[in-house]
Amino acid sequence: MIVLEYFKINMINCKRSILPLTLLSGALLLIGCQSLPVHSLQPLPPLETENIATHEFQLAEGQNMVGTIAAVNTQENDALPDIARHFGLGYNDISIANSNIAPWTPEPGSRVILPLRFILPDAPHDGITLNLANMRLFYYPKKQPDKLFTYPVGIGRQGWNTPMGKTSIVAKNANPSWNVPESIHREHAEKGDSLPKVVGAGPDNPLGLYAMRLGIPGYLIHGTNKPYGIGMQISHGCVQLYPEDIEELFKKATVGMPVRIVHQPYLTAWDQDMLYLEAHQPLEKWAKDKAKLKKQVLKQLHKISDEKKVAVDWEKVERILQRSDGIPTPVLVQSPDIAQISETALQLAHPDQLHGQPVIDELKDSDWAVLVGSFNNETEAQQLATMLNHQGPIIPARKIKKDDAYQVIAGPFKDKKEVKAVAKRIQMDFEIEVEPLKPKVTTTN
Image 1 (spheres, helix red, strand yellow):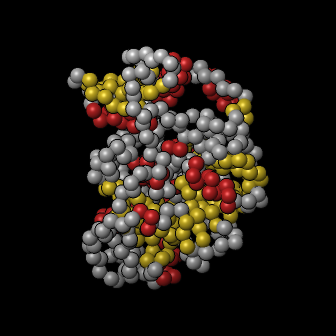
Image 2: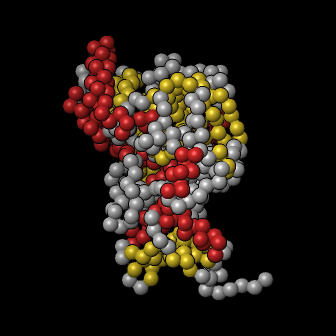
C-alpha cells in the first residue's frame, strides 16, 4: 500500500537562508460574443458565503465548464491554505491564482481570488475522473446525470507518481488500518525514524477515516491526517482528499465505479457563445511533453474557432499558456483579460470561522513547551508559527516578541515525553533542532 508518510510544508517564496526547508512545487466573468465591446465592471458587493457553489454543481447536457470566479478579503491570522480549504480549493489552486500574496502570512485586507470555475476534463461523465494536472477530482453520479461533484486532491510526488489509466473502486473501508510498505519502512529508517508494521485507525494514521482501494494494486483514494497537503504532490502515489471531502465521496461512491486518471494541463470550453482556455503547468513527469501538449491545445482552439466562426486572440492564448494560473479565461478577440476577471470576481463576505482553521490553546506557566527558533524579522517568525500550526496532527505554536527579536514557541504539551515526540517531528519535517522549555511553575493535585 503506497500512501503519504509525512507532511513537509513550506511557503512558495520561503528563503533557504531563513528556514532550512525544501521549496514545494505550489466573478462573474464578463461573457459575450467577440464582437461586443469590453466594459470595465466594478466589483460586486459582498454576499453571504453560502451563496457560492464550491463542490456541487448543476450540469446540463453538453456542458463542460461550471462555477464562478470569486474573491474574499483576508482577516487577521488568515493563511491562504485556510481560505482554500473552506472554499473547496487546494494549495495549488489558491497559491498560483494569488502569486502576489504570501501564502502563510498574507496582509489583513488582501483580496484573494478564489478560482472556483472549472473546465471539465476531456473524459466520459461516468464515475470518477481525476485530472493530475490540476490536482482535482470530478465525480459524475450515475443516478443524477444533471449533477457534478468536484474536490481538490493531493497526489504522488516526483518519483512516486500517481499512475494514469482507467481502473475502478474495488473495496471501501471506514477507519482503515495502514499496513506500512517495506519501501516506506526503509525510507524512514534512513532518517532515523522507526515505523510500526501496522498503524491503526486514529490521528496518526495517514489514511484518515476513509479509504477506497483502486484496481491498480497498492493505490487508494483516501483521507488524510495532514489536510494542508491537499493541492500538492505530497504522497507516495495515493490520492488524498480533505477529511470532510472524503467522507462525502465515500458515501456517494460504490464498489465497481469506474475511475479514470488523466493528465490534461490545457483545457478548453465553449460556454454561452464564448471560448475559454484553462492552463496549468504540466507536472514534472510530463514537462518534456509541454511543447506537444501546447500544440494539441492550439489545434483544438483552431478547430473550435473554425466551427463556431469566431476570431481568437492568439497573443492572449500565448499569455494564458505562459501564465498557467488555472483560471478559465476567455480567448476571443475583445474578451475580458485576467485583470478584468479579477476585478469583477464575485466578492464574498468573510466567514465568521474558516473551516478547519487551527485554534491554538493558551500557553500557561504550568505547561511544557519548546523554543523552535528566534528571528529578527517578525514576518519570518509568523511564517514558521503558521506552518507549524498547519502540520498534521497540529503542532500548536505562536510568535512571541522578546527584547528586539521574535521567538516561535510551540506548546502547550503535557509532559516531557510529548515534547520529545514533537521535537522529533519538527526535526524530521523542518530540519530544525528545538530547545525544550520546562514549566515555569509546577502544579500539584
